[in-house]
Length: 350
Ligand code: MG
Ligand code: ZN
Image (cartoon, rainbow, N blue to C red; front, top):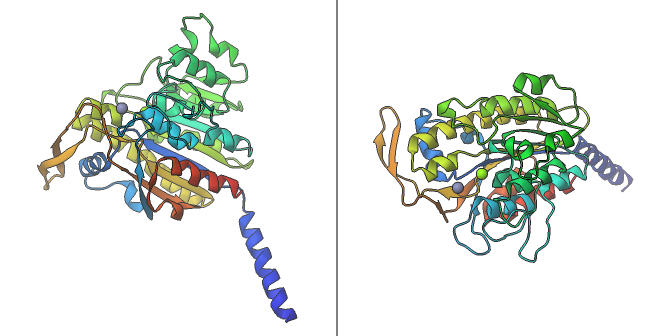
């Protein structure tokens, strides 16, 4: 009897020790407007391969908002960031008019470091869902102000003009006194400041095929060097923003080039997870854009061809890919708000 007791005691402490290997890093990668057809087209255009193939768990997310079967990026961003369905156009506010805390803000309560990367401006609906609460996603100056007092530690994105060329004549960059702003990735890497930002563009960054710098992979690698230190865990959101814009333009080449840029960043993250197993990595989309159908193409050189049913978004479910700690909970079909719930469950285990 006694020996059984010690056996279970040993098991208990072994598990306790295992659980204490440190809190879990949480990384959410969002391909805006990236449905299964966008992934398929990008994969073929990339020589029939994508880093998504290395993910052990795949699920499907229902993207509808509270007032529309077809969501916009504000409502779906809010669903994933804050765990509530809301009206199209609304950022971080629930149907009962509650200002919701995002997973980024909740991670901060656990002493996480936090980072945001987007290939749009930082005030665009998707990244804004992680730090702002506004009735309309178009309130760019209000969103910029809320960013200036937010819980974000590091960012790489566009949109500088919303901070320093404002209708209220305030220069938020001067007000953000504990921040250092870099002019390029080298400067971002070199800064020893506890909060560092790099505005990649005054306004919206260029498409990658028109020479956008830095690549999402390079931005991701620099961000990981900042976030991954000995002091603790981090939350990071990376958005491939312009896959959506390719969908709105019904431009398959725009979609595939943006997807390939996003896919290289996924590859960078997969390598990170292999070296740092104490990490949850999720790759998903906020919705599909364009109703893309791949109706033709050439199998010899994997050239996809197709057509679109709309210049807007569609209601199609979008895939969710997961690996690392808690990844198994992402299998199945669920509402996009469950992505928040599942991340929060991992955060609360710490
Ligand atoms: Mg977006
Ligand atoms: Zn869109």
